[in-house]
Length: 462
Image 1 (cartoon, helix red, strand yellow):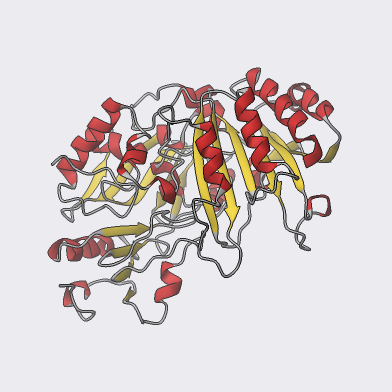
Image 2 (tube, one colour):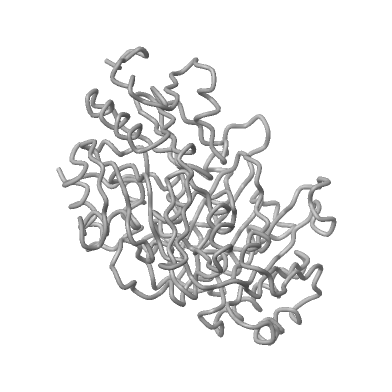
């Protein structure tokens, strides 16, 4: 039986405690991808570590699962029924230490805050593509930065300390020296082991990058994609890039050359001088007529301009895949899903070049694997107004992923898991066997009853 709304065990919480029907409940549970709906038993709007501990202990006392809605894009697995949801958006502190080149952030901090504050000290984090992305959730899945990923690796590789509330309600400071197994599991194991309340990680002495995007007509998609494949084969580690195929709506806020048509855009960021960058991307500029060219030396604080990700919530279906190579068959599959005359409903396909430092083991081991993968693919299909989702039979983003990862050969990545990847089989595919065994051991030690299961779940050993 669920505890009543008036349960006194949450009386010590400083932030809001909301039950279904309360004013503000729907807003507190809202997420960036509005096709994911959360309907938990109760929401605790945590203002600090003490609120998180109270919520976790309440869940433990009543044998309830815990879901964490951190910030930004939020969790991708719906939380419903008897779940206790913890939101951390009120915990948004950011502290930069220029002497140690580190940042300490609370659970609700977003990358825009960290990029801005670090820039004041002449430093840069391994930030995501959008300033609205939550720092902690992004890093627990690995974190592939938009500007510096291939130069320095995953964001998770550079975490120094994590503060977390585990299933027993205890607050722990976890490092490579203290709770080493939990430190390993948190960095790549996502939200399976507790509620992270704060994190400390390295910053880098970077103040500017040669970055931007080259935009081409969708009519030249094949030529541009083939040129991009050759470009990535020769790219130095200092060069991070992606290519995106986008069917933009015919709306006033969309740049005129993109409205209502397919475009192919190559996004690049070089940690190096402009003359080197000019030489590197010259073959791309020559591949086809360029509709718009924004590549230039920019302050690192402006890296959000590389992708110009949307900032307004929307309903969409997401699918991910990791590729060992961009083979001719993969090129055909991507173009079949994106070309103007294909009739496909897929709105966007983004292909990110991995490798470089992303392909090397970090100094302190973590659970982020698949380091030999060459590319990560993201297919995004906007859900038409009035619909709650697209069925698997009509979602060609899923069909694209199936073509790229034939039966028995598919691999996944912890940072690239969608709602469609919530099954135990899909989660296991994100890790190699030794890593998964180590994650299960940590889960058994720190969350033996699987309190934290409203996620891409790694269950404890039975």
